[in-house]
Image (cartoon, rainbow, N blue to C red; front, side):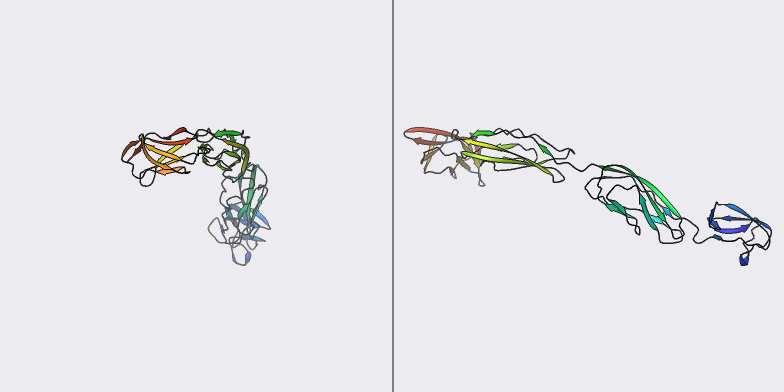
Length: 318
């Protein structure tokens, strides 16, 4: 700030004006503790001082950059917001805030806003910065806080019953996340041979052991909140079944369900006898020639032969 006469004469020494004139000043100044508007004019006379006039260093207010509108969610810590402000004279600034959402606070020295919101709603919050001369500047931003995330929901799952040796029909699993997040599915206690798809919740497979299981399906949302539903799954004795797959060497590997009371099995390829086996339920045809091959496992119990066709049939051998 400066104080000069209309003819360019500077403010005189000793706190008095040097000539009769109207003295104009630019910048911010105080007179007797009152802030003067600027630019402005002071009418003075020769030999008279201007009591308590302060201008120049220490007379300019701080500046604060706008703070962008913010969003958050109850119970989740916000990404810290740094208020950026400067003082033209380099003085230390003090930061205050009014209207912040509950759970948030501003550091009076650094201007960093941090914390975890405790209530939802819209909050117009004003941040003020004050310099050592008690000059201030402020900015206002809108904080929008969403309610706390809610756990997902899962409907009760009906009891299931499936026979061994047959692909199961997946039970209906009805689940949802209130925030629309993607759910992850898991299950414990599934009958042997069954598995759950973690993305869709579909349960697939072929049960191989008779028995009763208590199955618990759990859903988990992106916030790690979860819900569960339990049901019983009864596996009954079904028709014998056989599955053929290619092993690591490209040869057919057969697996079949046990026929109750049976201790001897015979394996046939393309209708021709291959091997007689004991009380086992697997066989690998290491000598299988290339081409489409059909396999049958035959059991004979009290003179009654049961042929189990291995699926798929035929199986393509490379």
